[in-house]
Length: 220
Image 1 (cartoon, rainbow, N blue to C red):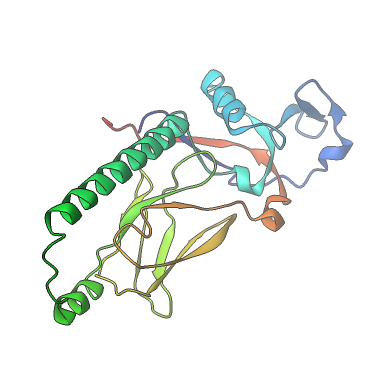
Image 2: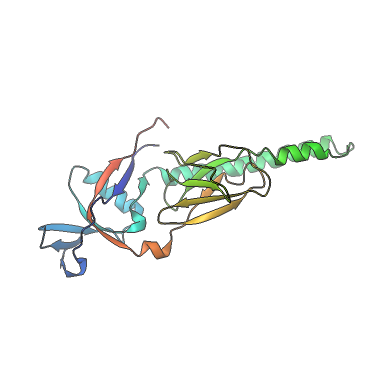
């Protein structure tokens, strides 16, 4: 993925934003004699565009805690492509199923309990984790009731390190977002997990100098 940036405030400021002199984009801090940009009501696209245009400028900002994360310019396009790809696969699966059903309609062998049990015990689970705006690297993926788990990579992708059984539960967690449990029934159960903002945490306001990091640039 291209044009991905990560926003952090390494040393939060203790000044009261409400006491700053109002400016067009935020408030002027009399202590450090700098304008503090109010990002707390800006959309992800507006935040991404700001730091693209002012990448060489030191910026002090006011953020909700949930906004200090990784942003991607291409995330919306990727989600659309994943959605369209999912529809295509669904139609392909339906077509394949109907074709197979027509071919084997007259032959109904007795089901093999041994094969079914083996399949349920060897489900390979992999997928992509995102929020409302972008894929999420560093999401914890843990098998409920154990210490077995993994994390998503820079593209938000993961593959669980061991095969799972039908009924196993994976717990997805990330700072500032609500944890989500996914019950595994097949290898597509966790193919596309979307985490939501934890509204309690999102109300925490953080001020300070913004550390902008380009996460990486891949060939994808």
